[in-house]
Amino acid sequence: MQRFPIPRLAAPPSTKGTITRLAVARAAAAGVDPRPLLHKAGLSAAQIEAPNSRMDAAGQVAFLNLVADTLHDDLLGFHLARDFEPREAGLLYFVLASSATLGDALARAERYSAITNESIRLWCQVTTDFSIRHGYMGVSRHRDRHQMEFWATLLVRLCQTLTASTINPIRVAFAHPRCGASEQLSAFFGCDVAFASGQDDVVFPRGASQLPLIGAEPYLNELLVRFCEDALPHYDGPISTPLRARVENALAPLLPHGNARASEVARMLGMSERTLARKLGVEKLTFIEIKESMRKDLAQLYIADAKLSISHIAWLLGFQEVSAFTHAFKRWTGLSPTQARITRLRSPSR
Image (cartoon, rainbow, N blue to C red):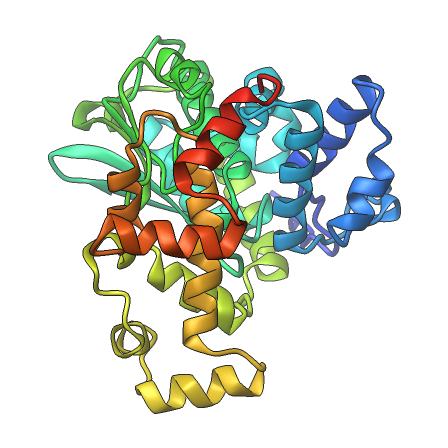
């Protein structure tokens, strides 16, 4: 029998920027011209129109934040994922859907997620439970809410769709703080959602990994896996993460424990404190400036969550005394934390 080789993929179809394109469509449907928002985020309409264009990950996060603020939608990412047709994810969706079990499918997602989004990485682990951890490459995690909520929501929808079941996670955790509308997430996921966590996790019972998929097709799956393996080198190269983002991502879990010191961050990044200071200096940055800016950004996010006490916010930001946090917040914003919260609550509902 004559064998015909499967051609290698010269220019793999890309679904990069999917969530950004969805946000553009959502803004336009609401009567908002997305072009000024794209420009402000460092993106362009030409990138949106070109299906294979690569978009800066930080720019996409900034754009989602701008659209969410403009539309007064604190759950923009969740709403986009809830309304998204999973098959639009293209190649990645079909390689998952044709797998034998949910564990097999998510192992494929772990390996091939770069085909869909270079900045998101998945890690799957089966121990006492079935955990899927999300992580960022090349972007500061603390600046994002919407992209991470999009992917977690889409992940759960996929698990339910592919298994034709109502399976819900037993635990969901996000590194970002909650917002006033976050109860909708708990209702969707069917479990309590932890916010301001040290990581981003979706956890299912251990047995979920063995659930069979209704669309399992071993021959098609083998073909698609070979296709993905050919496509992967186009997308799976090392992502250059700016040093500032690496420092911020290392700082995030250290802040609440009062251990956010330059020496500890340098150790986590595999360098000496002196080397870290020198490399930051090349970028005209200092560790203190990055830490201060990050605390300021997080403080204003935490203030928006009425369920977080001022003392707890002070702890989350690594302040040993509430008075020290209050003083710093006044320096950043001109208001006390309490005044800022009252102002926020009196603003139009979001």
